[in-house]
Length: 413
Ligand code: NAD
Ligand code: MG
Image 1 (spheres, rainbow, N blue to C red):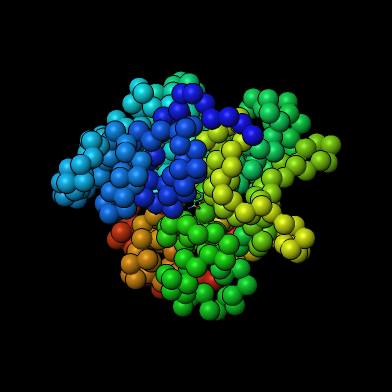
Image 2: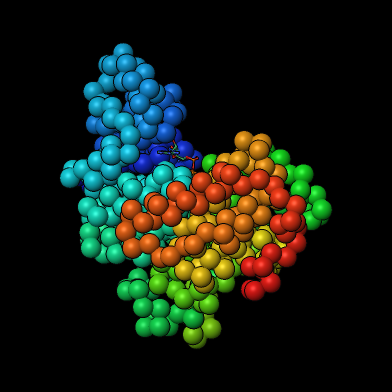
C-alpha cells in the first residue's frame, strides 16, 4: 500500500455541497494525512457547508448569495471556527487560484462553474474537472487557458476518466501517434431507455431524476434521462482528447459497469470497468498517478451477469442528436445548446415545462440564435446570456416539432 505523503495536497472544492463535492470529501476523509481542505464553496446550502467546515476546518468558505453568506458567517463564528467567509463569483475565482492550493475540484453545476474553473486553469493548478459545462461552452478557450497556465487537467466524469485510464500513459494529445481509432463512450440510457415513446410526455421531474445506476444532482440526472448528458460528454471528449467528432461513438450500456473504451488500430479495445460510484474517478484523479482506497465496493463480475451494448435511439433521445449536431456546427452552437438546456431543465424541474418540451425548446433556441464562435470569456458569456434569455421566454408552440418525433438534427445524423 502507498504511504501517505509528508506534505498534504491542499484542495479547493468548488461545489462541495453537491453530489460530487460530498463524494470528494468522503474520499478525502479516508486519507487525512494526504489531503488538506483549504476552501469549500456552496451556492445556498449553508447547513451542509457548516457541517463540512466543522469537519474539515478549511481556511475559506464561499457562499454565493450575499444574504446567505452573512447568516453563514454568524454561524461560523458561533461554532468557534476560524474559516473566513467570502461571497460571490470573484470569491470563487480567488479560492480557485490561491497560491497555497495545489488542486482544485471543479464540481459546480452548469456554466456558473466556468469562471472559477478557468481561474484554476489559468493559475496552473492540478484541475479535477467534473464541471463538463466549462468545456462545452468554452472548449478552445478553456484548453488554451489550461496550456497557457500549465494546469494538469484530470477528468472526473466517469467516461472521460475511463478514457484517460485506457489511453497509453504517455498519451500526448495525438491520437494517430498513439494508434487510437475511436473512442467508445458508454451511456446507461437512463430511466426511460425502454419506456414506450408515447408515455414520455407524462414524465415527472422525480421520475426523470430516478437514475437506475447513479445517484447524482438533479440537473445531471435529467440530462442523463434525456441523454443530453451524453451529448455534452461527446463535446467534452472532443476537447479533452482532441478527438474529431467522427471518431467518437456512443454505446448504450444499461449496466454502467464499463465506463468507456478506447479502440486501437490493431483491433484492441481497452476498457475501464468498475461499480458505478463516482468515488472511483475522484480517487483516481486526487491521487494520480498513485492509487488510493476509497470505500467503493469491488466489482464481482460473476454476480454482475450479462453486460449489454446497444446503439442509441435518436428518436427516443433527440437531445443527444441536437448535441451531436451542435458539435459539428461549431463552438457557438455548443454554448447555445448548453444554455438552452440549463434553462429547459430548470423550467422542467420547476414544473413549468413538460419533459418532451426540453428538446423542443433547445432546438428552437438553437435554430433561432446566431452563434459565432466566441474567442473570449466575455463573448462566451454574452452568447450564453442571449440563449438563456430566449430559452426563458420560450413557450410551448404547436407549430414546432412534437416529440417524440424526428427533429431536424436526427434527420441529418
Ligand atoms: P449538484 O447539483 O449535486 O451540486 C452542485 C454544486 O454546485 C453544489 O455545491 C451547489 O451549491 C453548487 N452551485 C450550484 N449552482 C451554483 C452557482 N450558481 N454558483 C456557485 N455554485 C453553485 O451537482 P453534481 O451532480 O455534483 O454535479 C456537479 C458537476 O459535476 C456538474 O457539472 C455535473 O455535470 C458533473 N458531474 C456530476 C456527476 C455526478 O455523479 N453527480 C458525474 C459526472 C459529472
Ligand atoms: Mg458521465
